[in-house]
Amino acid sequence: MATAQLPGEAKPKTPPSAPPRIERGFYTRAAIIAVGVLLVIFLLPQVLSLYYVDAMTQVAIYAVVALGLGVLVGRVGLISLGQAAVLAIGAWVAARLLFGTSLPYEVVLLASGVITMLLGTLVGLPALRMRGLYLALITLMLAGAITVVLASLNFPNGGHGFSGYNGALLHIPPIRRPGIAQTDPAYFRYSVVVAVIMFLIVLIHVRTKPGRAWAAIRQSEPAALAAGINTTFYKLWAFALASFVTGVAGGVLAGAVRYLYSIDFQTQDSITLLAVVLMGGAYSIWGAIVAGLLLQLLPAILNDLGVNPDWLVILFGIGVLQVLTTAPTGIVDQMPKDIARLARFIGGLGRRSSPAKEPAQ
Amino acid sequence: MIEVSGLTVRFGGVTSLDGMSVTFESGTCGLIGPNGAGKTTFFNVLSGFVRPASGGVKAFGEDLLAMANFRRARWGVRRTFQTEQAIENLTVYENVAMIHEHSKLSSSTRQDDVLGAIAIVGLDDVANTKVATLGAGQRRLAEVARAIVGKPKLVLLDEPAAGLPETETAHLGEVIRGIPEHTGAMTILVDHDMSLVSSCCQNTAVLDFGRMIASGPTSEVLRNEQVVQAYLGVAEAKG
Image (cartoon, rainbow over all chains, first blue to last red; front, side, top):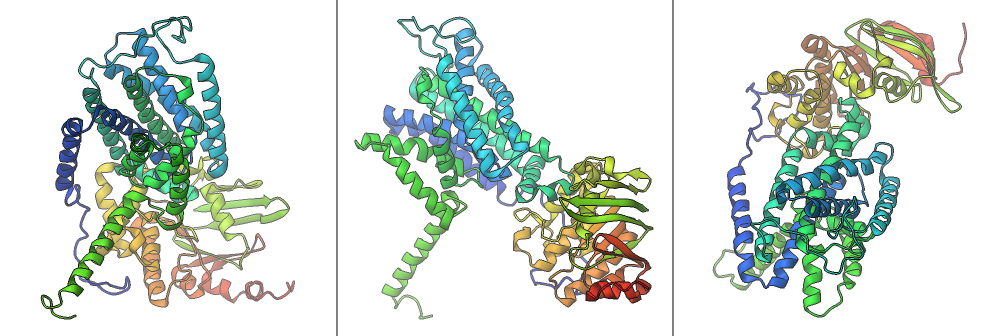
């Protein structure tokens, strides 16, 4: 079975086996991940200070944003520099609905996901005609435009009308949170659960028909067309999915910060976002978690240490350079390899220092 | 049956196909010609990547050019490319299944159809291996499996044997000769390996500078003086 055969050689005719429906080790991996998630949900708020619980809430939110961008960049090969603006749209829609209605928070999240999906797919329309640098440029311009619109529209603060903004308000009410997640630790758990659901949605996409179609488009568009793949449809689907999860993340963000200001959403955030997604690993959905940590936990740690987090821009620049030149699959793929190499190195040291225990090679 | 009539393709000032008219009857047909003759352009017209300036293509009675490019694959036009296009980070099975997924075929027969196509090309042992880890010959075979899975009507093979060693080319030839029997599809084979073309194709057409200069039974075509001259680059001797 394991012997290599030339295709031309006669071989014993065994019926070809169908691929296993569920990969080997699936249940073990699922169990490990579930335990990990439970530890994060129940243990982290116990051991971390409120400052870091808030930071971890942001990590959960931005991991989902990175996940959406990872679908575009890593799966389909479409560079979008407008995802931070898409996040802002999600936050705006959620804030407006939270102030204007008494809908349950989950319904608001779903609605902001769907509305952002519709708007975000419009951002994806240029992708049907262009890719690479031009697509990046167009999405960046669109993000800039959205930033300008939001700056003049302002985020809802409890006012009336379409914008829900009242500049004359003296006592601005905070954006409400779900009843089950009023405190910061509870809201952190809520954010992680939402993030897990978003990861599952994306994981299902990636592992099934759309994921395979995206892989074909990323490799070669003519070949994808020749395979019968409606590339227009699947590219828009990728934008729709990315926008949906980003919109939901925006909804979680609204409740996390409780006061939204347009100044907090800068056009260049999209560029930083792409940088951390590449560093984390755009080809793996776990890279999104690393991206979230880089983007939100690292600045929090630096702040805590009294270092200006603006220095991170330089660090991220170097990080992207390093990733693109030596580890294109990102930290999430490179780290285990490096750790294994380190373990072998340390193991080798141990062997050399105690030659009596092991026979010489 | 594929009827091509007066097909002309221009890229700016270059005329890639110049009033090409030919009929591919059935079975496996060869399409040969020197580099730049327009063979791949012809395939690109059939796949819908290039819009011809004039002319028409009827495939089994249907106007092929009126179909959107991705719909042609669903209708039954399949092809391989000169450069490898099997998707590296998917397994052979997934690569082949993807074509089935985007065809009109029922998903209930997918597993049998896919495994059948993989068996025809002889990749049974590596069906669940990622394409990235396969050798060049096996990747080519994976692409051929993609082209023949399900019920293709027309299989276009663009230099499938390029760069393959002799033993692998021989196996590829066997696979290609088996396509009509296994799938009932018509096959058009473009290749520079004349022994492969003559062993696979009853009929062969020859393109030179975008024009058909000969077509007919392969052995006769290969002896045709004009064809020999086109390949050797001798000045055209009108006789």
